Each structure stands twice: as structure tokens, then as C-alpha cells.
Length: 355
Image (cartoon, one colour):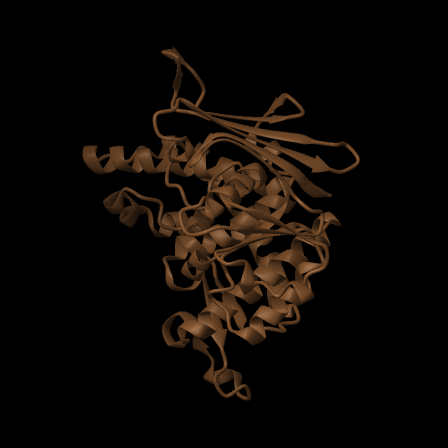
């Protein structure tokens, strides 16, 4: 399976464009502001049904337009065509859905749409996985697990909806000074059932990470999980009303990535976020992405497409060699500002797209 072609209409800086991709490696070359990351974002949209950088979907629509469309053709047995349509909510003055997903012209829910084009993205902003808030690390787990597990996708959506409803009840309880227990029973049950499934699946992925061979940089991931149960919800009952927020559950999970400076004594391990150099943090992220490739392949039986957005400026020569060594293992689409940054002797059957 690989992404054969991509058609863009009113997406970011592209009013209309078509791109063809090699089943091996495609190099997208262009100066800054040429639209390289926009192209990667469009592929990501077909893979996940969302952006990896826009806060709101409307930001992906070209300025002054009501609609953006992204189509992708896959080379596989079914010859699948994926399509994502984004709108401002109105087209030609007529109300329209904000987002639609189609597979071979048939409308799909996002949870069913994102099964067709598995990808792993590595870009300079991924350093935020290490240095940013816990939500960024949770997003990393969700990003991988959503692609390989239908149960996980459904549980994540259901949990999010129940959490918003329960927090709304807590807001009412804080404002009125009265907490009506009967209103919480239904939402508590949904949170506990789906929250425990999310925790279980996250634990399985973290075990895989810790057992995986680490050629780039060695580390251990500690799962700081927030278990949700009737007992814990009861324990934080009063505090939740004061905060008007649910204080336990997988929405409060975090990861601690530990490195061992001496490489001999595990008790001396330190959190890479607090004590690792920027170079070490970057290598941890690279290693996480390589493990994600292997994890998705182990679960789906197909190698995901690797998206590399301007990462050659972020890595030294030794670690760029590692990237070259894995390029041929799957379809790879990478961007760079200068073609001479690429050692073409090390890339098999690469095609070049110049912006």
C-alpha cells in the first residue's frame, strides 16, 4: 500500500494542485513558504482526519474561500480513493457541514475514515512531545493507537464526550452549591468503562516501546497513569466541584522519559525533559517515531507511510545516516529546502518534486 497521488483544492496556499508520489521515496524541494509543510499537512489530513498544527480546521481553507478539498489515491488491492472536504460552515450562502470524509465517494465517520492510510510524521515541532505539556505526550499515544485500534478510537471519542458532559454538571454544581448524585451516575459509568480501556491500550504500547530495540538513543518510558474508578471519583468528589473539572482519568495521564547518564546504574536515570540536552531530546523523539513505525506495522501487517518534514536541518550526520537506512523500508515522503542536502546515492529510486 502507498499513496499514489494527491489533489488539492483551496487547501492552505494551494488553489489547485496535483502531486504524484513514488512508491519508494519522494523528495519535495522548495524554499521556506513554498508550501512543503502544507503538502505534508494535506497527507496527514487524509491519514488522521485532522491537522497536526492547525488549532481549527478552518485554518486549512485558503483565505477567502468557503471550501477546501483534499483527495488521495492509494495503490492497493481495493484502489481506494480518500477525500476530505472542509468548509467554513456556509457555501454560497447555504449552510454546509464543517467537515466531511469520503472513501470511494461514500461518506464515513472519522473513526472509520482513518483506517486506510497509516502514517508516521517526524518534524521539527515534534520536540514538543518532550518539552511541552502532558497533553502533547498523550496526543502522541493517541496518534499511534487511533490508527491501529478501532476499539481505542471509539473509546476515545466516547470518553471525550462523557468528560465534557460531566464537567458541565460539575460547573452547575459549583455555581448552585448543590451536587445531584443521580446526574453523575450515567456519566461516571461511561468514563470508567472507556477510560480503563484507554489505559490498558496505552500500557500495551508503552510496554512495546520499552522492549523495543533502540538503535538511536536508549531510554525508558514510565507511564504516570491516572486510574479512574468509582473509589477514586468518590475520593476527589469535593475537589472536583471546586475545580468544576474531573480530576482523575486518562485525560490526566503523563509520560516520564528517563535516560541513564552513566549507562550503568538505572537508579541514576533522569527525566530527559528536565535534564536532557536539546540534542538528546531530539534523538529520543526520533527513536519514538521509529518505534511507532514498527508498532503500527506489527499490528496492521503493513508498513505506514513515513512523512519527514524538513528534519535534515535538525539532525547530525550520524543520525541522518539512520534515516537513510530506513527510507527503503516503506514509502517515504520528505521535504527539504535544498536538494543538495540529500545524498541521492543513499536513496533508492527517489523522485523529486520541486515547488
